[in-house]
Structure formats: C-alpha cells, structure tokens
Length: 295
Image (cartoon, rainbow, N blue to C red):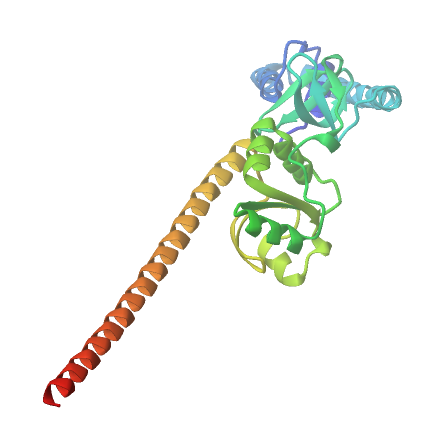
C-alpha cells in the first residue's frame, strides 16, 4: 500500500523538499520518488546518507508530533471535519472531505476524482436537503406507488455506519444531474437494511449495505431489480438509470402489445359469435319460409 498524503508530506518536509505547488497526490508521490532516486544514486556517500536518514526519521517523528498537535487544534477551531461534506466556494461544487491536513483537505468528488483543496476555499455543506426527495413510507408502499405511476423505483439502502463508500453514494445521489433525473422519472426510497423484509434484503442488497438499486415495479407486490451498485460515481449512476429507463420503455411496449393482442382476440371472438348467431337466425327464417310454402 502506498504512503498517505500525510506521510508523503512529512517525508518531503523532513528532506527539505518544497511541495507547496502540489495539488494532487500523484504530484507528491512523484516528488518523493525523485528524492528516493537521488538517495539511491548517492551510494558512495552511504555514511552521510545514513546520518541524513536518521535525521529524517527524527525530523519525521518531530514533524508528526507537531502536526498532530496542530491537527487537534485545527479540528477544534475549524468547521471542516474529517469524513464530512463541504462545498467549494468558487463553483459551489460539493465534495466529501476524507481528511483535513493543516490548511489542506483531501476532497473526493461525485465523479470519482479527488483533489487537494485549501480549507479556506471550502465551506461545510449540509447534505440533508440535497438529492432527490425521499418517499415518506415503507419500501412496500414506495413500490406500490411507483407501479401506480408507471415509473421506476430507486432505492438507497444504508448501513448507518457512515463509511467512505456510503458517504460517496450520498454524494453521487446529491449531484444535480443524478438528483434531477431521478426526481423527474422515479420514486426514490431510502432506509436502513434492517427495515427491509429478508426477501427484499436479498434482492436489493445481495452483497450487503450500502447499495443503490434501480427497480422496475411489475405489480404492487412484484418487481424486477435492474441494477445493484455499491461502488458508484455520478456518471455510473446516470448510466445505470438511463439504461433502466430503456427497460421501462420496453416493459411498457410489451404491455401495450399484450393489451392490443388481447383486445384483437376478444374482437375476433365477438365477430365469430355474431356470425354464428346471424347464420342461425337466417336458417330459422329459411325453415319458417319453407314450412309456410308447404302449407
């Protein structure tokens, strides 16, 4: 496993390397790789390197202790917190803050990318009012309502432990392109795994929670699960939903075809019954005419 951003910064600081212009973790990793390459190239000065390394280890420990104190103080004075949501001030774009390191925050975006952002450029974001409005009722009631409206049902089954995976799913659902698409074309239901009946747990969360599922209601008490997604970005969520809309159209067309076929069959049966009745009436008239002529 590679070094974390905190460890990379500590190592680079201990070696006197300026990383103030780095905005991505990959840039920090490249700088550290260059430092290691330079040290390996200086094998002729092994003793000096060992002393530098020892100094670096001591510097790293001191830096880590100093950083820990700074971090504790920052957590008390800053509204931004590890594992919380934030909004970038310049474009109002929401992110999930994996952790805050001094003046820098590692932000994960709804599209799956990440970036190091100065905390001064961020403000805390309340996600309670973001995303599609949730259906107020049980899962069974939401499914019945989706069937009545003839639309899709999107479910977000949470675990309640606020894991990284669950926070990123919340972020994807809150993205404008996904939230608008779901709100206009589906019923959205969210709840904890334990609130579902066992058969529904197995259908909606076969690998456990958290998970986002897209459901095609077949009746008030029947459904077909079109997708289950645990690791998701806003792009994959939109793609899954658009594919589900295509399945919904196919289902509607098939139902219309069955209805038309049923109506056509009924009309054919009615036409045949009418023709048989008409033939019987004509036969009776002919028999009556023949009897009259004979008399």
